[in-house]
Image (cartoon, rainbow, N blue to C red; front, side, top):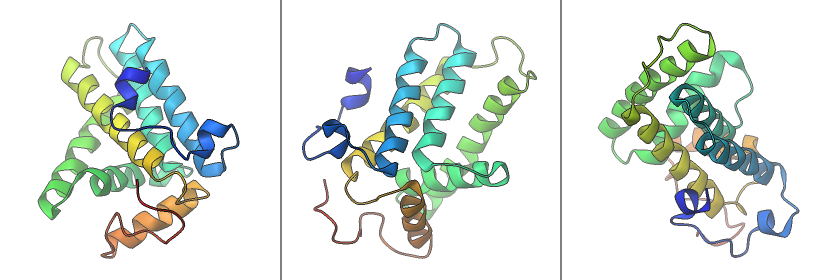
Length: 168
């Protein structure tokens, strides 16, 4: 897990490493747990479910009604740099998430999850976790992080954070 996840992150200056994470850090640890758990699964269905849970943990989703919106917007903001990229990422993730829902609710046909689906989910989960790890000192809770994403939707730069710590 460390090799697949740790590309691009070092544990310097992290409360997660010291064993005293705040609520934001706890959310990151949940995301890392589910990311690691996906690698222990032999079934693509279970791999996808674990990766989807990892991504959900990155955004601290709470309300069933808003999960897909929160996840698609959050991933689009983290991964897309232009309007077009963000729109395409939202569409792509909605399709991937619908596969997760079909698996979760027993509606998916065996073998409907492709290696490409797993690879893409892994890429999205890994990069979201790394983003959060790099900014672990910026937020005290997932709610703080979601509020920051709301500000980004209104035009704030993703990396324009309050001066709580230096950017990683």
